Image 1 (cartoon, rainbow, N blue to C red):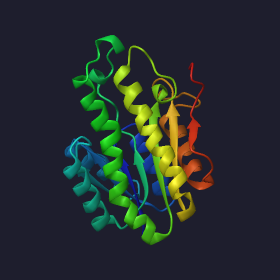
Image 2: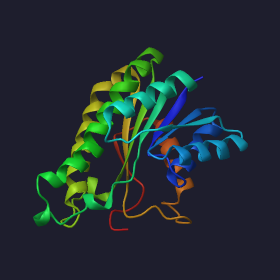
Image 3: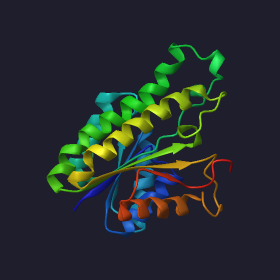
Length: 221
């Protein structure tokens, strides 16, 4: 049995993706800072017939993130699908002329160091399986930088570049790397940005294995 590891798992998109992939037979590793929250979500999923476990890690703590992924692998089996989708902190989104070099430390740790740690941790297992999928989920500033959200604009651009490089480097090994950009907020009931709809989109990206960048909705939405 293989698993999906959802980094930044919460009650919205993370829970929806857990249900969608769980229905397809994946065990689910839920990784977030709040262990009580991930354990509660795992219990809720368990009552619905999805095998899930919660693991605590802050994506800005490389050792903790690596340890959580190791524990997920040991508990649930090899990570075949990795989703990196934590929600950025509000203080990452300062106007560009008010953003100092120190203000970029958090965004870069969050959107660059975290993904690199996560991918490096699961890549050996994917290679052993001969298959895998890495899904990066980002906001609209990953595609169009916004002057009032400098931290995410800069760090998401770096995360996008890393993901695209991985897409090109790993495709020949049966490992598909893709990015889903969700402009604006995730909105319950929205025809394209409802969590369950986005989960279906991510499942389709995993299945179809075509192209790097995908858009959940128009950028001006």
